[in-house]
Image (cartoon, rainbow, N blue to C red; front, side, top):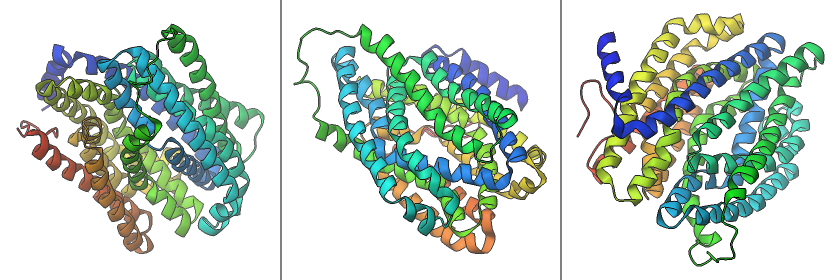
Length: 450
C-alpha cells in the first residue's frame, strides 16, 4: 500500500500539466506546515499558562471577528479570485488592478457599517446572546480591528488572484509567527490573563500594515498610470456586489457550518467546554491545510481555464487536485486517530475529554479533502448560486442537529452535527458537478468516477 501511494505521488509530482498548481501548492503547504506548528505551540502555551477558560474566550473572540469579517467583505474576498483572473485574461493586468481599487472602496464602507453595528449592540452580543460579561470589554476593540482586518483580507486575496505565490504564502505564515513571538514576550515578561486576546486583536492590524505596504510598493507602483480610461470595461459597483452576494452567502453558510458548534457551545455551555472543543477543532483542521494549500492555486486556475474555455484541462486539474489532497491528507488522518488522545494530553489532562470530538471532526475533514475543490470549482465557473443553495441546506442541517444533539450529548453531539453537514454539502456538490460538467472531482482509491 505504501509503495502504491509513493508511486502515485511521484506521478503527480512529475506531471507537467499539473505543474503550476503543484508548484504553488508546495510553497503554500510548506508555509502552512510551519504556521500550523507555530499555532499549535501558541495553543499549548495558552492552555498551559492561561487555562481552558481563556482558551474558550479566545475562541469566542476569534469567532466574532470571523463573523464580522464575513459581513464586512460581503463575499468580495472570494469574488476577487474570479474577477481579477477573468479581467486580466480578457483585457489586461492594469484593468484588473483598477477593479481591485473599486472593490477596496466598497469594503471600506461595509467594514465601517459592521464596526458601528458591533459598537451599538455590544451589550446584546456579550450579555444577552453569550451570557458572558467578560466578553464585553473586547467588543469595542473588535469593532476597530475589523476595519483593518477586512482590507487586509482583500489585499491578500488580490495577491493570491495575481498568483504572486511566495508573497501570498508569506502573509499566510507571518500571523502565526508574530502571534507566537508576541505571546511568548507577554507571557514571560508582562503576564496578564487576557494576553492571548490582546495578541489576537493586535496581529490583524500588523498584517494589514504589511499588506498595504506591499500592494502600494510592488503592485500598484508598477501599474500603468496613464490617463487612459477603463471605466467602460469595469463592472459597476452594483454588478460587483451582485456577483459577490451569492459568494457572501456561501461563505457565511460555510462559516455557520464551521463555527455553529463553538457559538452554540458558548451559548448553552461554559467557556471551558468551548476551549476543549476548540483545541480538538484546531487539531482536526490539520487535515484541512492540504486542501487549503491546493485551493490556493486551484481557485484562480479554475477561473482562468473556464473563461479560456479549456474544459478538458479544467477537468484534468480538478481531478488531479483531488488525488493529491487524498494521498497527502491520509497520513495526517491516521496519525491523529492513533495518537489523538496523547496529543490532546499535551495541552492538559482536561483536553483529553475532546478525543471523540476530534475523531468526528477528522472524519468530516477527510471527506472534505477527498471530495476535492468542489466549492471553488462551482464559484469560479458561474455556479455560485447553486453552491450557495447546497451550503444553505447543510447549514440548516448543522443548526438543527446541534439543537437536538448538543443538550444531550454535549460537545460530542456538536461534533457529530458538524460531520453530518460537511459530508452532506460535499456529496451533493460532487453530484451536481457530475451533472453539469460530466465529470467528478472526488477521488476514490484505484477509481476516479468519469
